[in-house]
Length: 548
Image (cartoon, rainbow, N blue to C red):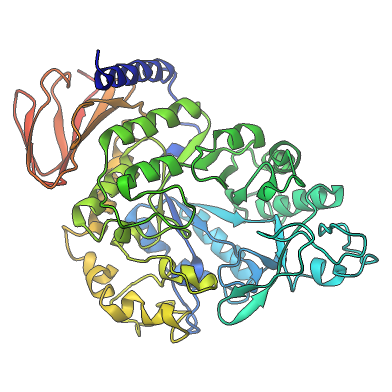
C-alpha cells in the first residue's frame, strides 16, 4: 500500500467514526447555533445616520432590512464601549457606549429592534486591558494609594511599571500610535485579583439583562471574547485563566440566560480552540485551521500576514482533513465558527486576486460545510482590502473600509470616517474604482453577482436541514481538482460537488452516490449514470430525499 492509498484509508476510518458518532442527531426544536448565520461587522464602517461619517447604532437599525434580505440571523459587532482607538478594543470606559455610536438609550433601542425581528446580537469584548485615559490607570499610575490600585497590575510597589501589552515586564511606559495621530498606552488589568474578577462578573452580567427583570429583549444573546488565552500574552503572570477567570464569568451569565452563546477568539491561530472551549465553558471558537486550509498555498501561520505571493489553490484533501479534525474535536453542543475573513485579516478578494471562481468557491465552503457560518461585512460583495505597514493602527483600515452601498462615496450614509486623513483614504477602493465593481446597488440587480450567490446559498442552507445539522462524508478522495462531500440528517442527504480547477471537468461518480439525486442548485448536466460536466469553478448541489 503506497502512502497516498494509506492516507485515504486512514481518512475513511476517521469518517466512519464520525458518522457513527453523529447518529445521535440534535433536536431541531432546541436552540442550536448551527441554524444561525452570523454577520460580523465594525459598526463604525456600516451606515451613518447623522452625517458625521461614523457608522452608528441608529444607522444599523435602518439597515436591518438589508441583513434580513441577505438571510442573516445574528449580528456580531466589534466593541461598542468608549475608547480612544477607532476600533474600540481598548476602553477608556467599559460602561459607556462610544458617543459616536450613540447613547445607552439608542443601544437598547437597537437591541430591541434586532430581537423584534427574531434576530440575535453578539457583543465583542476584550476586557483584559485598559488604555491610558481610563480612570483605573490614570488614577493608579505612580499612586499606590489610589482606590483603583488593585485593578491594574503593577510589577513594583510604587506603581511605576504597569504590565503592558506586547512589552516585557518593568518596561517604561510605551505609547501605541493610534489613528488619527494619537498615542495611548495599553496596560493589563490584574486578572488575578478578587476585586477585578467580581467586577467582571457583574459587568458581563449587566449586558445579559440590563434592567434585571428576567426578560432578555434588551440583553445580548452572547459574547465574542477577543484574544482569549489561558496564560495571557504568555507572560506567566495571569495563568489558568480559562478555569479561574473566564469560567466563573460565563457560568454567571448562563445562570441568568441559559441560552447565551459565547465564542472565543483563540490567540493562537494555528489551533482549533477546542481546549479553550472545554476548559472555559465557552460554546465555540473560530475555525482558523479551516480558513488557512482554504487559502492553500497562500496561507502562512503568521498572525497578520497571510501572504499573497504564492498562488491560491484550494486543496480538497486539506479541506476534508480540517473538517474531519474539527468534528472530532467539537462534540455535540459545542461549535466551530467558519469564516474566510475578519477585521484582522486580508480580505479574501485580495488573497485570491479577485478571481471570481475562487470568490464563489469560498462562499460555498463558508456556508455549506459543517459549522456556524460567519460573514464579514462586505465579503458578500467581494470587497477588497489588504493590511498595510503604516506604523499605526491605521494599518487595518483597508480591511475595515466603509460598506459600499453605492459606488459613489458622497452618497449619504456611507460611513467614511477615515476620509481625507491619510494614505488609507488615498488607496481606498472608493477612489481606485473598486466600488464601481462591487457596490451593493449594482450587485442586487445582477442575478449572477456574488451577492446573489450568497443570498441563494443562505436560503439553500435554511431550506435543507442536512446542510445545518448533517454529518460529513467526503465522496471523492483522490482528485486534486474536485471537492465532493455529502451531508446526511435523519435519512435525508445533500451532496455538494465542486470543480476547483480552471478547466472544465467530466466527473464520474458511479458507485459514489446512492439513490437518485435531485438537482437543487447549480449549472450542470447530470446523467443517469451519475456522471456530470462541470465548468471551471462551478458546483452542483444535489438532494436525495428521506423517502429513498
